[in-house]
Image 1 (cartoon, rainbow, N blue to C red):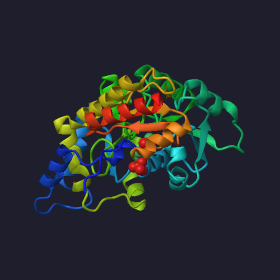
Image 2: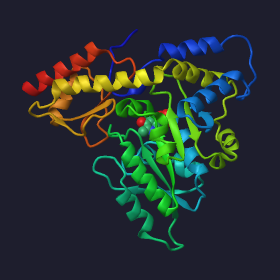
Image 3: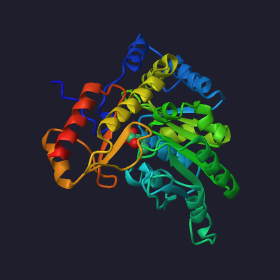
Image 4: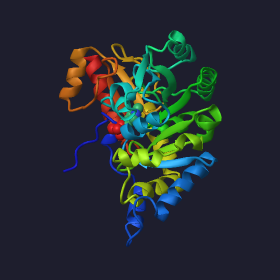
Length: 344
Ligand SMILES: *Cc1c(COP(=O)(O)O)cnc(C)c1O
């Protein structure tokens, strides 16, 4: 049975037609296993074309693995990773970054809006330099942030300049990278390697695929032995073509960007209808595909009674997150319910 659309998360959505068709096209006959097939080659080349650089490309089943293995590749076990206190690696990966790096510690920067700043990075990285403290080695930023904000290219450049000065690598968790590109209207290259990002985890799942994240190393030296790391972690797909083919469909047709634009537009659509209402506080300016709404607890309960699902784990407000296929009429229903409940 078809349930009504919910906006609790963008991973409630299904598979977009472009990814689905590419899966079907890959499902013809046999192909070599473990990434030696032409779909994997085509997907890797499509990333190199999109990013206009000869990056090293790997595929993992999910974002937790992609982030954790990428961070592990940038660290020794005695190193540390600087992140925002809202970072998915800190709050939602069950310690996987520490586990896969054999103990590299996450150093969490306080942040009112979920973003990291050069000042916060510098404060943590220079706080201790003695042998008793894990040596800072990596900075990870989430683009867009867990709070639905987007770092400008200028902000990323400023962070990477600080990283270079302090001898830190820069990793980007791009679980919703397409939404950030759509939001800024800038090229993937400008937002990543040209701005000093060393490694990007590019999310496919929330972008409209069934599963799969790509890990892009812009400095090939950092990718040394990464294939072994993936295999050891159980992330080497035996029928790799089915992890790779959807990317070919997404990248070749431009669906990755259209899907991101659609999610962002739906967030704006909700925002337009509820901003300025008394008793409704928009917690962060919606710059990607999320809207965070603070309302009195009783009103949130009423919204739940009306059948809406949402998470409140960031700051206690309701998070609404719009996927590639978010239905505009359903967005309007949500807006109408919020308006009615706040007026009551
Ligand atoms: C969804 C998400 C991930 C990946 O999560 P998985 O469930 O492991 O695929 C990573 N980072 C952020 C910011 C996310 O929102």
